[in-house]
Length: 110
Image (cartoon, rainbow, N blue to C red):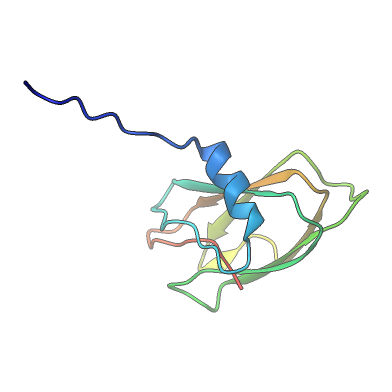
């Protein structure tokens, strides 16, 4: 008798929420051209973001109550840089980065 293997799938939203709990040290998987990676910023604070394969790529995400930017934000990874050097968002904001380069990038937190 063949045993059925059931894989438990974690949704992207569940993954992002879990990652937010420990943003410091978290890194997304590598994304290829036209692929995206997202992160929900639930905690107030400053987050230094970089690309592990290309540590010269850096940006800062500031999360503060009452920030004008909230909801969903689309940013790019292009020309070996983040499309914003710094962005201020409200808690609960989802930032989605889309890779525009032929090289693979990721989003990692110091």
